[in-house]
Image (tube, rainbow, N blue to C red; front, side):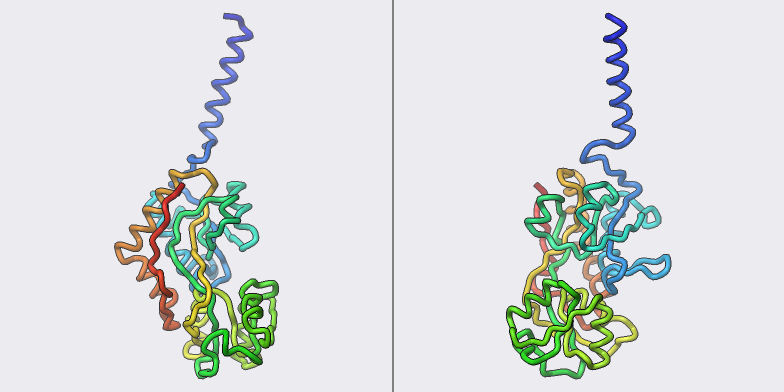
Length: 273
């Protein structure tokens, strides 16, 4: 054998070892040290307060991580704003995204999903003493708040052309205005609304109307093609539902707002493909 061929074999072997060490391939996630993307600014779902993280998504992610072999202290929490979720997954900055991440066909072109682990719906948040708003059909002439560019607000505006839409930069600003009485209602996913209503400073002041008019299937996002990891996450979600941990997490994070999970919950996770 020529020295040239020997050199080529050695180089190929070194490359294979390098790829193995780096964890190349779709199924190479380090399950002992997971990087999980969550929201940092959604009370009741994903909220960062100092060095602590709380919310339904955090509890779901922590449970899943435990089933995968990652203890809570080994999870690295990464902020996952809505517009960056696919990029974080595709570039390997996170292993999983659990961040009110609705499963849809457009997103499935870029990432895979396990779940759903929760079915949410668009709803309305109003003051507790307001009995005039019972759903979108009663918003005619009312001041409705949502964040700038929100599809939630656009959906309602199409349903009720007479609504007076007020667009703010954040949902927190909408909540402040709602409590102050300068707007009449806030719209987005019912889970997000319940999270705000459950905060101590709003106790007894706000309520979710409880008439959802859309369906949002929250899933766990992961790298496309990693079917093995998807199956493991799916099994973890099923286990969380069957052993009662799912209901406990919903009650602990959203129950203070008298929130009841809408029809379809707890969901049946879809098979990974």
